[in-house]
Length: 329
Image (spheres, rainbow, N blue to C red):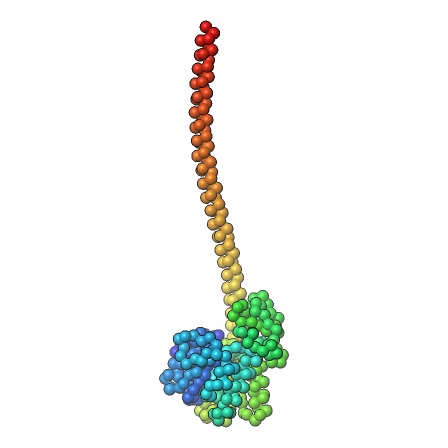
């Protein structure tokens, strides 16, 4: 299978595939298909095991089959429950909490077993700060003040002119932390509410590649799947500090690379501007040279005409002098 990029759920495939094999789902659902990077891996796995795939995305790619066009909060209320969900859509509290509620309530209504749910982007920067792909679709009372131009940086909770941003593609909440803000906050609030209702939901947190939370109920997954999850949980506990350090360094390099790219783009735009000015100067010089050559040609013509007039004057003067001499004699 193709390797997944760090920004995609595909980066976790070596961890998730053994868990899925042990779970043996009949239907899986991916929320947030985007360009289809993870969908390719998931579809290949599903075809090999006779598992049905359902994707949910408001603007899915044409080459990924089985995707329902629409928003997750609408589609998840209508589709048949799945055994495993992969959430990587709109990274904000309102959307993620609504997705988790819809998944849990859908399983209850249909009498299905509680599913395994994998939620991406529970780490920095969206774990504790809302990000909106389409702010206008979030009800005003559930939307934090945001910026579509500024970005986030590791050294401050304030937005900066730079950092992690993508103007025109997504907007970022002004503040980080606090109530009802961020993906991880939505996951934690869902778990707290579910546990209060008596549901034994657990969370396994992988602090790398933007962060992954695996949610499951110990009374709903097969024993062999539970064993896989516990082995993974033990590995993460042993490597947690190391993974956090690697993630911090990766994000530092990523943001440095993005800033360097923007700086290089700025230099290129400046160089392009200078090139345009130079081209304009070359054109102006060529025009001036053509005018100068034209003036030189005109001057040569005038000089030749002046020389001819001077010759005529000399001849006239000689004729005049001869006439005067003749008259004097």
